[in-house]
Amino acid sequence: MHRRLIALCLVVCACGDPVHDAAVAALGPEAPGVPHGPYHRPGQPCLVCHGGEGPASYTMSFGGTLRAYQTAAIPATGATVRVVDASSNTYETDANCVGNFWIRASDFSPSFPVSAAVTVSFANTPDTRSRVMLTQMHRDGSCNSCHAGLAGPASAGQLWVLPDTDPAPAQNCGLGDGKGDMPGGAGTVPACPLKSPPLPTMTPSYETDVKPLLAKRCTGCHAADGEEADRPFTSHDDIVGSIGLTMANYVEACRMPPPPLPRLTAAEQSILIGYIEAGAPDN
Image 1: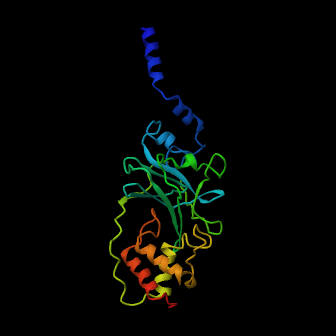
Image 2: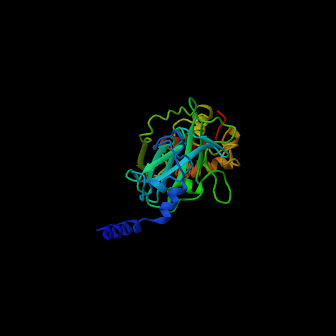
Image 3: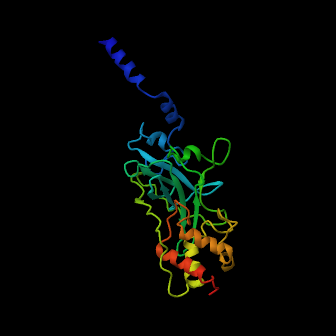
């Protein structure tokens, strides 16, 4: 009987994956005072434990940590992470008070490759800041596997969204019992309409119609401190002439904002196209 138990133990132990076991062990112990749950291990590769091989109790399709700034470990609390897969299926979720975000595999099982973007909204203003991932994910939704800490030979740099000049979102972090999931929502990107939306009967006003729309949907990238700093849309002069015509063409073709940022509505398209076709008056 003793020999049988030894043989059974050897069989069971041989079924483990030493590479995965080593990856789990390399994560190290939990931080003191932080229970298992949504606030633990910020910055670490979530799918090492939540990738289906354990030891976590559920599987994620995506998980990571979002920072406010490129060079500081300040969480981007409340920022929205949006992913779009190869079949135009989308999912949105928010970063919590330590910057962690995740999507359960049971809620969203993507077809790779996948594009991603993140957006921060500012309270009581239409202003946003956005960053679009310039490359696609082809197989791995464990964001911190590549974006571990600051940029260097072993890391693409942490995930961040705000320029240093912007205030960080309020954290309001109560760790509680460490249970629960972040809210999220799934959807599908609709096909771009074959016809342009009807133009407005009156020329839209730059001050009351166009400027707030640009602040809400465009200047998160098209600003002096954004990803499209060489093509700013923060003043009337920025959107006249050839830049305005290019903007109208991209808006009509549903190419701006770029996926996976949410597409302009038909009403928003109508305002921008109608305004530019009317000669972009300073009204």
